[in-house]
Length: 410
Image (cartoon, rainbow, N blue to C red; front, side, top):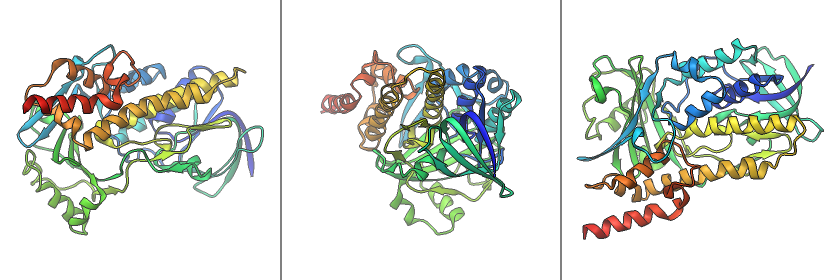
């Protein structure tokens, strides 16, 4: 078995891993990335929110993404029966980016990885982690390539950005139930050859069928469109066992989009992810940190996945670099507490969505502009801004506002 000695090993070449790698490469760190799959590869999480733009910029990856021509996302629309709630990121509380992108992740992730490789970073594709020994002074990680060749890597620090693979969470028995009630999802793509012009063919839209059941429409600049449903796991059991027939049956339940996709064939057999939300006992340990979906993944209703992935990837990289330089880092305070602060805010909004409180606010017939601006800032991902009362008081403010609106209508 061959051996390698590096400063930082990054597991996973998705957005979280590439933001970590981009930042560390800029600071001259000796890094290696291992990625189980071969890029380009399909991935879910196709709608971004503005906060991640800050992270791509700091990692030196923003310009290459701008040049790719992805569909710009300036806000989001929610539809329930005849009611519409629309958010424009330029009309949010506080500072921050006013737009982001909707992206086919196969292309998006491949662009990030190619850019990082072009800077000289070693990315070992089709290579997986098969063992991890964290009992030594430095972590010892054993990897295996597609031909069965094994390499033992001694690293001074490990950043696990393995996403749904959740490598260290599995190897170190760190899994735990999510704080969010678990839902499942079914999704596919179509080539939308007769897409409407303007907003109808550009804006991400969520159509709500029931309080806990919703459909997404995400158009991409390449002419393809992502379609998907999220619901309690039992909701999917009413449909045909054949996923293509089942997806057609689900589409027939839509109101706003009811016949929009009847003439399109599906690009691939609909995929299903059961029990979407994931969590872990802790986000860090001795000389390792978990980032992105390898740490915590919330329900996708507000597209927070890539934002938390890049936020945690950048934060972990910064702290790991400081530790390499001899600084003593309080990972509990500066990483886990920091990330959990943002996760807790978004968790409150996800829970308020599914219990109906947030939907009551979004679909109110006369939305309060001040409330809407502050909620919009949260939906844009600026969940660490304590100047926003809808962040600072997130645990109770949505139920308070919802009850106030109900009383107002009596």
